[in-house]
Length: 186
Image (cartoon, rainbow, N blue to C red; front, side, top):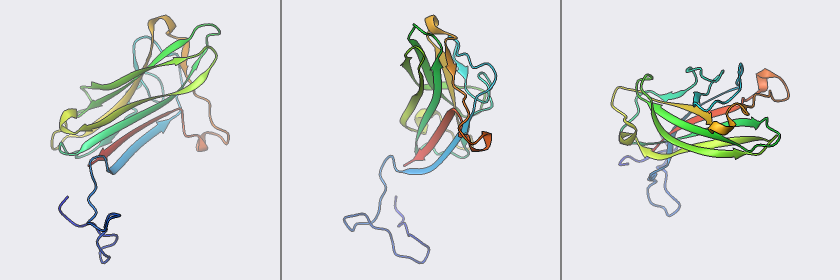
């Protein structure tokens, strides 16, 4: 960064702890976009990964940056509450983070698996670590769109459910059972 950063337009330049000009390094966050919702409808997680949203399989739940920059870095986080309805089988829930620049063609960027003990409700998480915009296919004039998918191991499909309980206080105060965040960073 070659331009000084000021606390206010007429204020002094910001300095780092050592007194040198403030120069954020790789990973310093510039902007964040996030979305959350409570899932309804059929909550069963199948062995074929489904897009997570207001219903499983609905393709309307994503976050995006208009005008991303191929020279900047991006990271994403997805959190989902799941429950294993089995009384004797440990289930495996798999979470995926995909990106797109056009909303039609998606590329899987990160995935992981989580074991969920019988009768247990837990939160699962997947992180797309810091990647350059160029590595994610960012092109000038296009958006960077992120979505999350969930699947279950073949032997435990449909025993894992997206957990959709509403928090105390009703829907107006519910923060939902899925959270998706996309950050733009230096």
